[in-house]
Image (cartoon, rainbow, N blue to C red; front, side):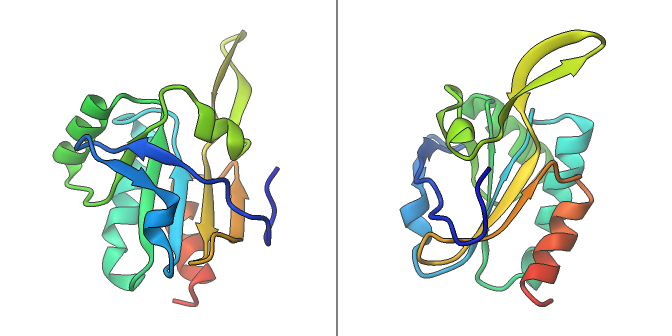
Length: 150
């Protein structure tokens, strides 16, 4: 697992509008990178909408969501809820693996690989300030605000 003080793994993925977004884009400002299992599902919708709802309270801190969904699905999700921040498509799971959130999961006795809902607050120099593995949708905005002293 990644820890506070670790260098955040770099990434460059396509967002919901087909544009490349990299961690370098957020140099000199904080960014919350959160991983969610699947766009437009109840927990992921709650988490994303709550984060969108605190956008005016977090100042210059950016928010970026990452899931295995294709850009077209991310766009539909963004348009449905007017989220207003980049949703990145990690279809090969390479970024999820780098952040140690691609895990073996089980549901109804079936095992499969998937995203462990997690969030990382990264400073403007690429260092991890906070790492929240297995975070709940409701706690994501709460923990972010607390970490920012808001």
